[in-house]
Amino acid sequence: MFVHFIRAIDNGSHENGSTFKTIVTNQKSIIIQCNCENGAHCLQDKATCPQTSICVCPKCFYGARCQFTSNLFDLSLDAILGYYIQPHINIKYQPSIVQVSVALTMILIKTGITDSVLSIITFRNKEPRQTGCGLYLLTSSIITLFIMIIFALKFWILIIAQITYMTN
Image 1 (spheres, rainbow, N blue to C red):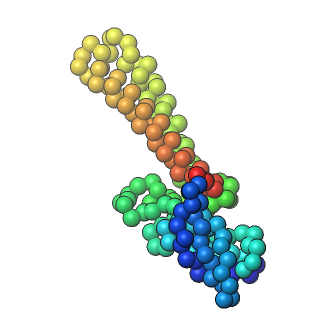
Image 2: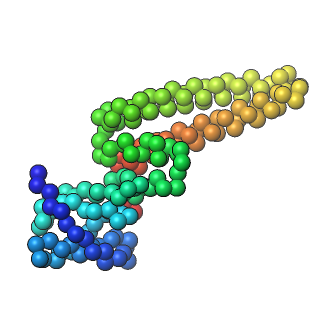
Protein backbone atom coordinates (compact mmCIF):
# COMPACT_ATOMS: atom_id res chain seq x y z
CA MET A 1 0.00 0.00 0.00
CA PHE A 2 1.36 3.40 -0.98
CA VAL A 3 0.83 6.17 1.55
CA HIS A 4 0.53 9.82 0.55
CA PHE A 5 1.85 12.35 3.00
CA ILE A 6 -0.43 15.34 3.03
CA ARG A 7 -0.39 18.79 4.57
CA ALA A 8 -3.66 19.81 6.17
CA ILE A 9 -4.90 23.33 6.82
CA ASP A 10 -7.58 23.42 9.50
CA ASN A 11 -10.82 25.07 8.35
CA GLY A 12 -12.44 24.76 11.77
CA SER A 13 -15.51 22.88 12.89
CA HIS A 14 -18.76 22.64 11.04
CA GLU A 15 -22.22 23.04 12.62
CA ASN A 16 -22.56 19.29 13.09
CA GLY A 17 -19.20 18.98 14.88
CA SER A 18 -17.19 17.56 11.95
CA THR A 19 -13.76 18.97 11.26
CA PHE A 20 -12.94 19.80 7.67
CA LYS A 21 -9.45 20.41 6.38
CA THR A 22 -8.10 21.75 3.12
CA ILE A 23 -5.55 19.29 1.83
CA VAL A 24 -2.70 20.60 -0.32
CA THR A 25 -1.20 17.86 -2.50
CA ASN A 26 0.45 18.08 -5.95
CA GLN A 27 -0.43 21.77 -6.26
CA LYS A 28 -4.16 20.93 -5.91
CA SER A 29 -6.39 21.67 -2.97
CA ILE A 30 -9.15 19.27 -2.00
CA ILE A 31 -11.41 19.31 1.03
CA ILE A 32 -11.77 16.10 3.03
CA GLN A 33 -13.25 15.23 6.36
CA CYS A 34 -10.39 14.40 8.71
CA ASN A 35 -11.10 12.82 12.09
CA CYS A 36 -7.63 13.37 13.56
CA GLU A 37 -7.48 15.55 16.65
CA ASN A 38 -4.88 17.52 18.62
CA GLY A 39 -2.75 18.50 15.63
CA ALA A 40 -2.22 14.95 14.34
CA HIS A 41 -1.16 14.38 10.74
CA CYS A 42 -3.46 12.51 8.36
CA LEU A 43 -1.96 9.77 6.19
CA GLN A 44 -4.07 8.38 3.36
CA ASP A 45 -3.69 5.49 0.94
CA LYS A 46 -4.49 7.60 -2.16
CA ALA A 47 -4.15 11.27 -3.03
CA THR A 48 -7.58 11.30 -4.71
CA CYS A 49 -10.57 9.38 -3.37
CA PRO A 50 -8.81 7.89 -0.35
CA GLN A 51 -10.20 4.63 1.02
CA THR A 52 -8.35 4.53 4.32
CA SER A 53 -6.56 7.03 6.49
CA ILE A 54 -4.55 6.92 9.69
CA CYS A 55 -3.61 9.58 12.21
CA VAL A 56 0.01 10.07 13.24
CA CYS A 57 -0.16 11.44 16.76
CA PRO A 58 2.12 14.11 18.20
CA LYS A 59 4.05 13.42 21.41
CA CYS A 60 1.88 12.67 24.48
CA PHE A 61 -1.25 11.90 22.40
CA TYR A 62 -2.59 8.48 21.50
CA GLY A 63 -5.71 6.72 20.26
CA ALA A 64 -7.15 6.05 16.81
CA ARG A 65 -7.82 9.78 16.33
CA CYS A 66 -5.17 11.04 18.80
CA GLN A 67 -8.04 11.96 21.10
CA PHE A 68 -6.34 10.90 24.36
CA THR A 69 -3.52 12.68 26.14
CA SER A 70 -1.11 11.56 28.82
CA ASN A 71 0.10 15.07 29.73
CA LEU A 72 -2.10 15.42 32.79
CA PHE A 73 -1.52 11.95 34.22
CA ASP A 74 1.27 10.58 36.35
CA LEU A 75 0.33 6.94 36.94
CA SER A 76 -3.15 6.50 35.60
CA LEU A 77 -4.49 3.48 33.79
CA ASP A 78 -4.82 5.51 30.57
CA ALA A 79 -1.20 6.61 30.57
CA ILE A 80 0.21 3.20 31.50
CA LEU A 81 -1.86 0.96 29.20
CA GLY A 82 -3.29 3.34 26.59
CA TYR A 83 -0.22 3.43 24.34
CA TYR A 84 -0.16 -0.35 23.96
CA ILE A 85 -3.80 -0.86 22.94
CA GLN A 86 -4.05 -1.08 19.16
CA PRO A 87 -7.26 0.24 17.57
CA HIS A 88 -9.56 -2.04 15.56
CA ILE A 89 -7.75 -5.20 16.72
CA ASN A 90 -9.44 -7.94 18.74
CA ILE A 91 -8.28 -8.57 22.33
CA LYS A 92 -6.85 -11.95 21.25
CA TYR A 93 -4.43 -10.20 18.87
CA GLN A 94 -3.43 -7.28 21.10
CA PRO A 95 0.17 -7.08 22.42
CA SER A 96 1.00 -9.43 25.29
CA ILE A 97 1.11 -6.57 27.83
CA VAL A 98 -2.56 -5.82 27.08
CA GLN A 99 -3.54 -9.48 27.30
CA VAL A 100 -1.70 -9.94 30.62
CA SER A 101 -3.35 -6.76 31.95
CA VAL A 102 -6.78 -8.07 30.98
CA ALA A 103 -6.11 -11.43 32.67
CA LEU A 104 -4.74 -9.88 35.88
CA THR A 105 -7.54 -7.33 36.00
CA MET A 106 -10.17 -10.03 35.65
CA ILE A 107 -8.57 -12.05 38.45
CA LEU A 108 -8.40 -8.98 40.72
CA ILE A 109 -11.99 -7.98 39.95
CA LYS A 110 -13.39 -11.49 40.56
CA THR A 111 -11.41 -11.89 43.78
CA GLY A 112 -12.26 -8.41 45.05
CA ILE A 113 -15.98 -8.68 44.33
CA THR A 114 -16.19 -12.17 45.83
CA ASP A 115 -14.32 -11.06 48.96
CA SER A 116 -16.49 -7.96 49.35
CA VAL A 117 -19.76 -9.85 48.94
CA LEU A 118 -18.72 -12.53 51.45
CA SER A 119 -17.60 -9.84 53.93
CA ILE A 120 -20.91 -8.00 53.55
CA ILE A 121 -22.80 -11.25 54.20
CA THR A 122 -20.65 -11.92 57.29
CA PHE A 123 -20.84 -8.45 58.83
CA ARG A 124 -24.51 -7.92 58.02
CA ASN A 125 -25.39 -10.10 61.01
CA LYS A 126 -25.83 -8.40 64.39
CA GLU A 127 -23.30 -10.53 66.29
CA PRO A 128 -20.13 -9.34 64.49
CA ARG A 129 -21.37 -5.72 64.66
CA GLN A 130 -21.70 -5.64 68.46
CA THR A 131 -18.22 -4.19 68.74
CA GLY A 132 -17.17 -1.01 66.95
CA CYS A 133 -15.03 -2.98 64.49
CA GLY A 134 -18.02 -4.81 63.02
CA LEU A 135 -19.66 -1.65 61.68
CA TYR A 136 -16.30 -0.43 60.34
CA LEU A 137 -15.69 -3.73 58.53
CA LEU A 138 -19.21 -3.75 57.05
CA THR A 139 -18.74 -0.19 55.75
CA SER A 140 -15.28 -1.04 54.45
CA SER A 141 -16.66 -4.07 52.60
CA ILE A 142 -19.37 -1.99 50.92
CA ILE A 143 -16.87 0.68 49.86
CA THR A 144 -14.49 -1.99 48.53
CA LEU A 145 -17.31 -3.48 46.45
CA PHE A 146 -18.06 -0.08 44.89
CA ILE A 147 -14.36 0.55 44.21
CA MET A 148 -13.99 -2.81 42.47
CA ILE A 149 -17.02 -2.10 40.29
CA ILE A 150 -15.69 1.36 39.38
CA PHE A 151 -12.26 -0.10 38.58
CA ALA A 152 -13.84 -2.74 36.34
CA LEU A 153 -15.88 -0.09 34.52
CA LYS A 154 -12.85 2.19 34.07
CA PHE A 155 -10.69 -0.62 32.74
CA TRP A 156 -13.25 -1.91 30.25
CA ILE A 157 -14.23 1.60 29.11
CA LEU A 158 -10.53 2.27 28.38
CA ILE A 159 -10.17 -0.99 26.44
CA ILE A 160 -13.39 -0.49 24.46
CA ALA A 161 -12.73 3.19 23.75
CA GLN A 162 -9.25 2.41 22.44
CA ILE A 163 -10.19 -0.62 20.34
CA THR A 164 -13.39 0.66 18.75
CA TYR A 165 -13.74 3.70 16.59
CA MET A 166 -15.97 6.16 18.45
CA THR A 167 -17.63 9.16 16.83
CA ASN A 168 -19.73 11.99 18.23
